[in-house]
Figure 1 (tube, rainbow, N blue to C red):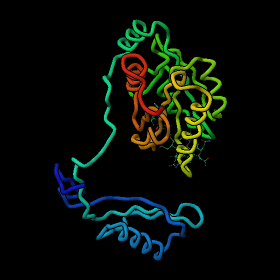
Figure 2 (cartoon, rainbow, N blue to C red):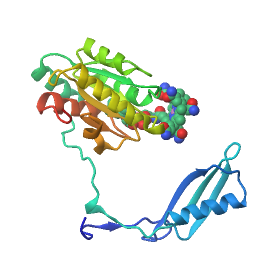
Figure 3 (cartoon, rainbow, N blue to C red):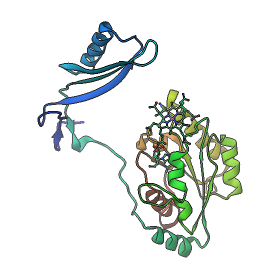
Length: 253
Ligand code: B12
């Protein structure tokens, strides 16, 4: 990337542009003076100078949690920041229903699940269940969508079978646990299984979501779209209509 082009920002804590940030981490040591020194040294090595220890608390045997506040010199050129922007129009539930009814002339079938050992269903329920989230109703509320929510800890073969049985237009998978990159491994396994089980053209749209995904990794993971923190059902419904009805199916082949 060439030199700075756009607005350049630096963090601030007390006064604009002072570069102050706060980080937290855990070290595998009991809480004592040496542990606190180690935390400050780590912060220094991360580029914080000065690094001020503002909180330290032992968490069970042999682990200490730290919060460190300090100055960094790094700048961010906003024009060089790359993000996945929403590239489809946001529709109301009424508009989604109208488009599906008029153009698809049947209900759009959606199958959702948490796969692998992941039992964090709150996120997928927020998207699918009528109760929804952030003042929006979930996809079950949409008259022209048929929703099958398989719940927690669904195996990939079970998901493929359920998608086949429901003639799914889209499969929505949630992955919240990221320990040992489980979310990435599970997503790759899922997309490979659909590629193996169904020919192009018959394969449902594959969507994953969860708070710790990098939304730019869709192609790499073999899915059509990734939704991250704070996703609302309306965004997902609008994307479904865009990808399956009004636009061409997007993403990985
Ligand atoms: C509630 C909770 C639980 C509940 C889950 C209950 C349930 N039925 O879901 C219980 C107590 C069971 C639980 C258990 C565990 N948990 Co827990 N849990 C949480 C907690 C506190 C909140 C998660 C949540 O509900 N968020 C609210 C929802 C609405 O947000 P969301 O999931 O991000 O969903 C939104 C978006 O991401 C997106 N989205 C999500 N999925 C999808 C899918 C699609 C298709 C789309 C479009 C969008 C989308 O849309 C949603 C709405 O905006 C988090 C910490 C936290 N504050 O986040 C830890 C957390 C996720 N849990 C954690 C852990 C470690 C565990 C356990 C392993 C603990 C243990 N040792 O037993 C177990 C694992 C159980 C299992 N087998 O999965 C860790 C994960 C760490 C990591 N690196 O992976 C966290 C981060 C806590 C922590 N800081 O350590 N947990």
